[in-house]
Structures are given as structure tokens and as C-alpha cells.
Image (cartoon, rainbow, N blue to C red):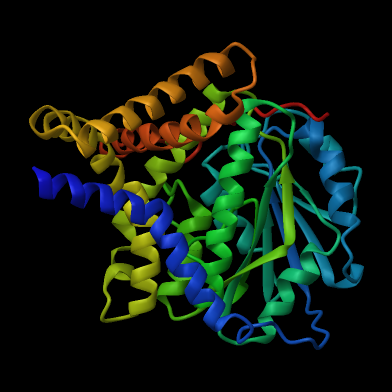
Length: 385
């Protein structure tokens, strides 16, 4: 039990702290070797926006896309509204420069993207969510990396608009940490999964996804890595989106992501073979697989193990048990405060950490029951300030 306790604690610390230190040091050693070429590179590119019942924000999104700092004759806009039953078509009809695809049937984002790619004639394609706003340099910053023939995809950065809520602060804090890890992974070799809010691909490398795919962006980008290409992280291209409306909505989103994570692990098993791509296997296992599988189980196991050892041996085990109790008590108090509209303050860290790991178990249960549809109800987002 002593060995199991310290092994569990070591894996947990490695997952959330040790890995960050390892890739930070590793990235510092190789940083600068993979900078994109400084020469101008302005190929034709298609910007695809899947939109489900987003009529209320379509005008703002279209104006944002048209304002991108990229030659207008080389930037093609394609919106796809499959399944939408609002007035999205009427809004898009006011913009003749936008190509609009629509079917009354709703089959989910993956199928919409599979259909949209058949209309893409440019060598590069950018996907972005409708509820995000892009910075003016986004397209230019993404496509410049394709001057390197080994780059198969480029992911922008997801930024969460601050609104003072617990869900917004938690989501924003998480994405700052995640963005740091993504930059390190990219500097070392390749990103371990792109963000669907803003991601681009070499069109020729885009492969149709299975209809039930939950995390389309993640699976598509890592299949490109599996094919021997790199996925680059470009924080100079970002998508700004509102935070979840509440902690309940954020939890719903996390559970879906975790269900998709289990599905992705089942479909991306070749990436774990260290004989094929050892660096990829290390990055993928450490950054993704541990978080979605082993580490949450060890966290759950750590508390009863600690309690038994504290009774048997006292000392350091009693101290660690108290610390665990304080941590989870702080998470519970943070949830109680946030659910009543109060600021979680410093309780935000234990609260969001606990939410993430509870979501793993709920997501895994959905995956094994085949209960997470690819097409899902939109998460309610906070209104614009």
C-alpha cells in the first residue's frame, strides 16, 4: 500500500506539474529551430464556418471574417448550416461573397465538415467556430507555416473572454495552462491535438471522419501527425469566445470532451507505439492519455489509500490526508459560492481541477454506454458584454 500510494502520487504530480517542467526545459533547448520562414506566403485559402442555429450572431461573424487581413481574392468564405431551422439562410443571403451550404438534416459537425471539404478547391482550409471572433492577422499567421512541407496542420489559440464569472475565470485559467503546454509540444515536435475554434489543414491531408466522431478537430489533427506530418501551434492567430454561461454548462461541455477523449484514444492507438514515433508517443501519452485515463483513477484511489496509511503510520500520511481534505473541501466551497453567483476567488483552482477529473468518469461512462451523440445541444454561453 505504501508503494501504491507513492506511485499514485508521483504519477499525479507528473501529469500536472512534472510534464510541464519536462517539456518547458525540452522546448527551451530546441526553440528557434522551427520558426516559420519570414518570406511572404499568401496562397489561396478557404475559411469554413459550421453554424447550427446561429442566426443571431452570423452578421457579426461574417463581418469579422471579411475584415481579416488577407487578400480578398485569395480568401474564400464557406458557411455550412446543416440542420439549422432558424433564419440563418436569410442572413447569409445578404452576403453574395459567402458560399452557403445547407441541408435540413442535422448529422453533427464532423459530417458537416466532411461535406464542406468537397467544395474546397484551395490547397489550404481553415475551420473556425461561429461563436468566435478572429484577430485580423489570423489567416495570415496560420498559412505562413505551410511554407514548410512537413507542416500538415496549424492550430490557432483559443482565448476565453473575461466576464468575472467562475466558469469564465476557470475556463480562462485552464486554457492559459493548456496553451503553455501546446506551445512546448509544438516547439519540441508537434501539437498533440488542435482546437476546433481555429484550426487549418492542408486540404489534401483532410480525411473524412466517422459520422459519430465527437472531437473532430482532435482526431483529424492527430491522424495527420500519425501520417508523419507536424501540427504547429500559432498563438498569433486566435479565436476569442465567450465563456460558458454557468458552471453547469461548463461541466456539460467537459463531460462531452472527456467522452470524446475516450473515443479518440480508442481510434488513435498507433500513436502510443514508441517504435514508430517515439517523441509523439511520449508527448501524446503524457499530455493526453494520462489525463483522460490513469491519473483520474489514481486521484480517486489516493484518498482511501491515504486514510488507511494515516491510521496505520500517522506522520507524513496524516499531513497529506489533511491537505487532501482541505483541497476537496475548498473545491466544494468554491462550487457552493459559484452556484450562488459569488466569486470563487482562490477556490477556483481546486474547484476547476476537481470538475475536470469528475468529468473524466462521467465522460468515460458515456463513451462505454455509447451515450454521447456526435451532434449535441449547444452549450449555453455568456452573453456579450
